Length: 477
Ligand code: NDP
Image 1 (spheres, rainbow, N blue to C red):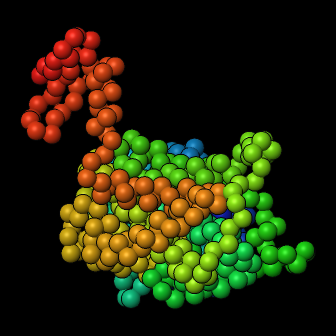
Image 2: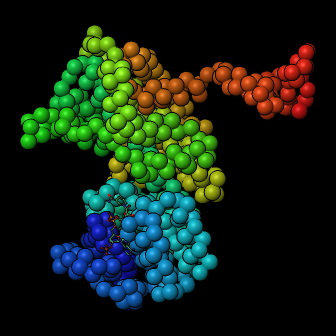
Image 3: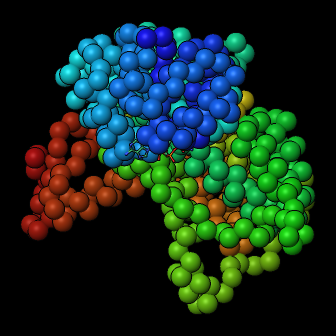
């Protein structure tokens, strides 16, 4: 038994994670249900480090030093349970199973509880960054016991992306915490991408600019506050020309997106926790809308294409308006995502460090961005911050952007350019800051039709108005 850690499931992700571990000097046991993958890994990359290949799960487990640490990197869902069931009889008390697949945090909580009862540790670990991240340094979000992290931490922190000397891996919290945070990360990714897509659409409509011209604008934006991986690759994708037709690549791609994954989980969980994550939800729904080709066709026939011809008066002002609106909307999406993490942490007793979470997204993952440093600073300065929006740096960026934000949303509505994420983020901002909300009327209506009672601004207690009586007197409920 010589391997420090094992990986079972050697498709793209597992293979690259195993290589990353080996390249960093760890002895890695490797196994896959179909042995061809194990053989090809060793044949093609065996010289990158020390691999201990096994063709049976029993030999694989036998090759691990104790306490054993086994990473499962298989298709999420039933295959993960199947592999856990096969592993359990081969393991001993104190051994650690790590699920690095994209599991739902509720499944992770269930698995952790069941394995804890058997004396095993279960670490549900979120891994972001796709196959390239897995090989070169992902963002790693491990959940599970502190004891399991004592063994896994040094290895994971070493193979994760490093930014300014800090590893993009840290222990998130017990049981489902790691997969929960990974889920919200993906939700934020949905919002970030939708906002970028809307910014592109606005620039295209308002400036009648070509994708290549818009690529230049994004390239420029990537030198400032918006600097991020997603903005960088937006410039790359918009600047790309389709070889077959010579047209802009973005114009030959079908405009229908799917939302089968973690965006949906994020929204479902936020509804359960009562957290308004409008940016992520609108982004998820925008993808669904795009996919309803039949309805879109019917509506286009019924109403024609949207809006008036739009030509902005001043190009530079408009570009700066869109930039500011994008930044403000993006801050809203992150503020909502962090509210969601805080709510999950409190609901499930995870004690998640919000600023620390921002730190590990600075590298290795899709939403890596300059602005994550500011989130860390905000939570360091005030751990109980009621919303990221009110932290000084973000409050200033949002305030400075409000006039631009309003102009962009108004002009887009007038021109018939859909901006669900831009406009709902603005509505969220206005809702949060409003002195009075029409929720008072909702409460009145609910009391009228269902005697649901209401509270008053001037006295404590719950009240009900006797709507059907002549004097409509009020009683204390
Ligand atoms: P896949 O999700 O395509 O899964 C293929 C692997 O699962 C193969 O090793 C396959 O073995 C194994 N497998 C499937 N069913 C079983 C079973 N019943 N018993 C044993 N093994 C089984 O692989 P990926 O590498 O793309 O992803 C792995 C995990 O990582 C998934 O959970 C995915 O969601 C997650 N992930 C993926 C990312 C990505 O960018 N691809 C990013 C982050 C996470 P066999 O070779 O024998 O068929």
